[in-house]
Amino acid sequence: MKAITTILFGCLIILSSCALGRINPYLSQSADAGSSLKSDKKTEKLLTKLWSERHDSASLSRFIEMAKPLARSPGDSRERWLKLARAEHLMAEFYTESGPERLRLYLSAAHRAEAALHLNPAYRDAVSRPRASPEDGLTAIDRADLDAAYWFAESLYRWSVESGPERELKHRRTVELFFSRIENLDPGYNHGAVERHFAIEHARSRDGDPESWKRSRVRFESLLRLHGEYFANSVAFARYFARPTGDEALFKKLIDRVLKDSPASHPDSISEQILEQKRAKALSTPKKAP
Image 1 (cartoon, rainbow, N blue to C red):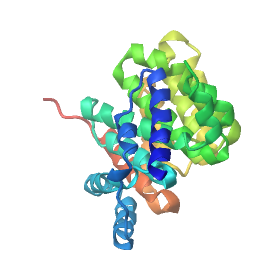
Image 2: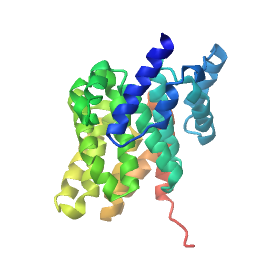
Image 3: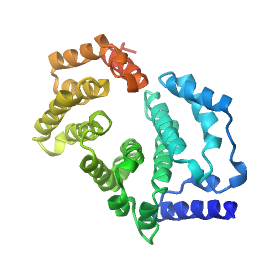
Image 4: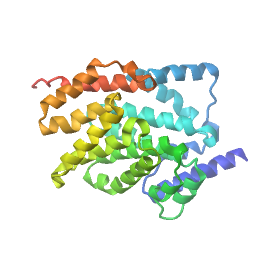
């Protein structure tokens, strides 16, 4: 009976993915209950240690490989799928340039987060109807689904942007609606992640709208007032606004702030803070001519 339930669950998710033209090979594997592995205390302890060291690519890679076979049973997969989504998204960030592996990681992260969303029965029912799309389940998303919704939208966004204009345009509405839903449920979610997303988007769309720079700056400045201690906000402001606009004074101020502060100033996100410091250092280091 348990095996049948698992298979039916997997099939529901696969069907909804097919309706979107997004086949998820990972989820087809999750229907195989026999492939699931049970962890012991020793394994869990090691996974916890590796997760705390996710700012190191070797630790992160090992975490992903160890966690994959433990997340194939829908029974208690939400936390594991979300951690894998975050881990694969983060691993993609370690690649300095876009390429097949980086794209694969972003897309896999989106699928895993989407799988976590399907553990909300109301969401699953809404998106499993014929010709349904992820945004059809938006009203079913509540605060308990925020992490899944965010990592789905953010990973889908990164994947579509780097896949080219056609895919970015195809998924733009889904991404925007998901971020708007998250903002409605929790405006300050994840240290201002939604505000950061829209600030970046305004900066990226500057060619089509001369007012976009102004909207981007307003968003970034609001973000720093509310969540200035989170390094990703300053780095994004420097990377997407200050440098493209040629405001080197602002760029230096933002980067110096990140480099001088301690990652421990945000105890729940030390790994992310360390990574953003590395990114700030890379941005501030002039590239040598070939």
